[in-house]
Length: 428
Image (tube, rainbow, N blue to C red; front, side):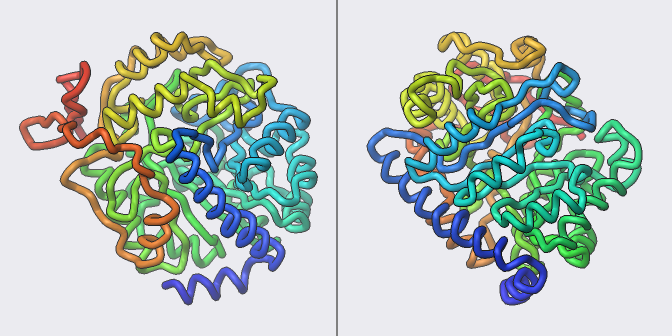
């Protein structure tokens, strides 16, 4: 798998793109994580990976979207982005995720990439605005990888994305990126309507044949104003997703990303470990993209480093989450999220201003923490990389006595601590 993947990437990606990825994301990214670990031992938490939603506007209308795509445009301007990124870089960071909305609708996105040549960006996009002109510029710069979202084949894509002919238009953008030799990925939010089509070996083979270099499967999270709880995965489907990823990582010449497990298959939350936080289109600093509450902003005169490391809200959120579950606190314990928001006086930073009501309407459900179903990495490369550069970093040291509740089938129902909902039962 590894030799074939290496040769395939070397043949199909631009040398400049590969060099910038290897240096800025690979070497400097590892140094950034090492710096994070050394700071964390002193109780100082500054994420090596920051995710920036640079605007709310989008050309699609996806099921379950929590971004205010229908609202008037809010965006982070170029000056704000440079200030934030330069401050983070001065403390060792070199990688930033760029989200939206649809990032390519931001009029200054390419200017940002061009003016930050020593920074690496992963752009989360639906791919439909990747034209030859855009792809050519990205190849010239070499410091960004488009991660193109595909949520199903023809019929499912139209249903999931709220527009017509979405699948073919997205594939056109994907093929354009590949033709220009960009390091290109495909992301899928695995849910009820696409798990049988896209969580398959044949789909991976199709992506490999097209020239895709990496994929990212993440489970759908029912949140927001139109959460579509019916699309969420059951415990069994979550285990199936994890098993598929570990097996295909050891078999297929395509890199496969996941963000919720360590090398032994123990669940983790990137927010709880402190390895990442999120900035929304209004500049609010959130624990993660789906928890849309904040007390701090990127406009704080202290700069992003001091703002994050001195935030009582983020500290409380990380510690309370890590003491309660190894999974997603938003899905498993919406009641605890509400409590954390209230006791910190955090504000709803959405444009719609209904995030609290949405949170109160949520029903607890399974996330990645599934005790008894841990599946370790099968390939030595992933095991080694995760062991040293993507673990829980000791965040869950206080969980020794936390035992999940169980239903009659022995399934995890949440934590025995706090006021966990005793009625958590999932059905297919």
